[in-house]
Image (cartoon, rainbow, N blue to C red; front, top):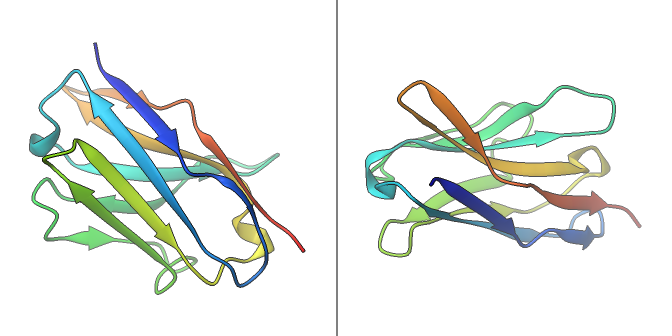
Amino acid sequence: QVQLVESGGGLAQPGGSLRLSCVASGFTFSGYVMSWYRQAPGKEREPVATITPSGRSTSYPDSVKGRFTISRDNDKNTVYLQMISLKPEDTAVYYCKVTIARYTYWGQGTQVTVSS
């Protein structure tokens, strides 16, 4: 079955960086758009990055543009989220997501806390 397993979260200082990973299994990874979302306490889950199957095209909301970079390694079935210049408002649980045949799958999430 489809599985998404995130890792790489933790505590970072403002201005710091973290790299998240999401290892996928149970489907043909190279054929699907992959996305990262985040959910802060008391807020709705929101998208932060999306990448096409080939990796040639990416998109970001203005809130993270220029600071977050999504990439993928189709040989390793892994999607990454490199985050730099982190801000306290980036604190959230980060999830990777894939939609297959109109069904959306989520990982378990990884906590990112940005605090001094």
